[in-house]
Image (cartoon, rainbow, N blue to C red; front, side, top):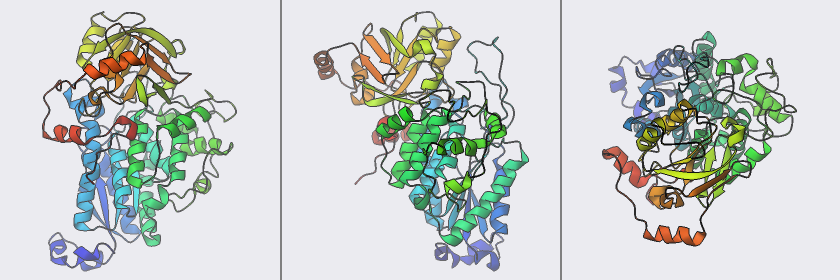
Length: 527
């Protein structure tokens, strides 16, 4: 066992009350991201305790240590939003440090929200020891009426991740589709007893993985990633899933790119219509048959690799064999989809040579194609001020740049800009394009992740006030109506501007090391 290297230091463990009998068993990390700042994590001590019980019952000795967790909802609209995505790398790095320093044998990763789940999965792929994900589960969903224009469309109802198919729940779905979490991980509500049962079962399953020495590299294969992308497109997941799946694939040494997402989007029917695009929440998915029912439908057209291994020890085909849809209005059949294409689309053009991302399932039909004059802003706050004070009008294209991974730095969500557009009742009349990113709760013609970003000299940097922007989501294009000669002329005169905000030490290091959104915004590792 890896832990043999520290077992000889028994006196230290004895000082903490550990017996020799406990120390002879596999030493299992319970990585717990509980804290008192994040609704999706406030209850995770209960989940961790259940996972601990499962590990003990199956013959392991658990050792719990923490991971940080940031709430995107609390950080939105201010400089704190610079930190959530960079925290993903901190989470992966800190788990690596604890696991390698103490040479533990396996990991149960107790997670919840947006960047924590991918960060933990990245650590699992990097360390390649038996590992399993258990999410804290979603909130119960409850929608506001039409009398709250501009407000978020749902009410927060106790502990758990925000109830719609935003980034947190999208990534819980990705963990399940990848096979690194047990079935039903994605949608059992946080307040249900079944969530604690699943956590206990996850602890037991981990020990079976350890017994058989099944490691993440056997699960996080090319087939697993293709399965996850298919599922992502079928459910209409958050645009942030692309960033996180690419970063995870990098850690798993699996080669995927934006072209794969584009290909699968074009050929995967969308079977679900969850908030923010539609009326349903994650507890509806739970009642409708779960993600396993979605995957069962996709399998009917041969769209999944059913031989992919999962942490249950079974193949994906075995996991979904008995799944069925119990609410057909929530999960449509493969022959009656909401749309013939997936929820996400990849756009290319002279503004996005390396690609851009849009959640096309959340775009109003009249905005799928749009041409209008650029209204250019170099920071989100300036754009929000213009929108809220009536300086953005019908037909405009709001351009927000220098908000990419390097330019932000930190790749902020432009959620206050999108909320402001909705609040001013412009969502059917105004588009927004940016090298920043969006919340999973964003709807409308909001195109993000434009790559290369402006701070790296991407074409977005030379767009001027009044330039005509053309977007065509059905044709997957995003262009500025300028000759290439003019674009080159402007780029030759361009130089990087100073950062728009005060940046502390970690963000400076992050800005210096982070790569493009088109590669998952990962950190460059020196050769």
